[in-house]
Length: 128
Image (spheres, rainbow, N blue to C red):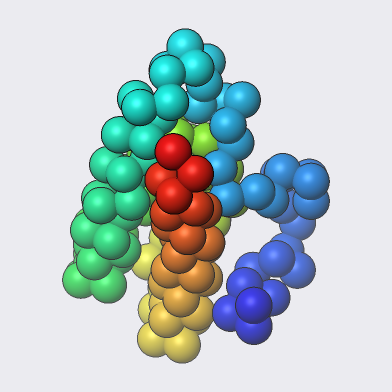
């Protein structure tokens, strides 16, 4: 997790124990424990998350950057992907990086965290 290292060294609002790909307790509160609905919602998140990352990659203005980060944050929070939401919130608050390296690092960290969530979702589907 080299790309996440630099972002993880900054103070986080989440405790280390909360770094799970998907918080099932959180999600089940909204799905009333309906496993099919959980998988449907998680798959929607998995399908939409790359679009939000694309919005970050394509952002040319502060507003475009913040809008994409904010959308990803909300989507991730809704399904209990708290670590993705934390990284997206940091991107939103920090704003559009002027340094291309910093921008790439932030996007890479998000892609990696989303990948972890998507892998977790795939495991859940295989268990069903």
